[in-house]
Amino acid sequence: MPIFYGKRNNKEEVEVILVDTEVYSCTDGSCIGWMRKDFVTEDLHCPMCGNVMAEEVRELPKM
Image (tube, rainbow, N blue to C red; front, side, top):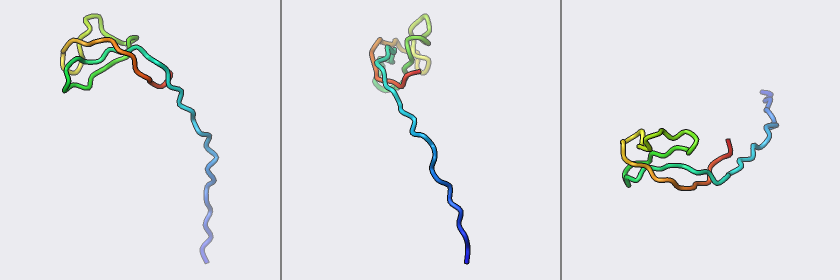
């Protein structure tokens, strides 16, 4: 008769806190590029496709 030893799930649930964050997102409809305002480049061009980026607000996890 086999004996099974199970692990109890003692991990705490990590609460994800969402905050309104200023970001720049690509204006090209087919590109999904965006970045937080704190990390944006000086020329405000998308690093993925090179198009112009526009400022917007998104709910993102708190850093």
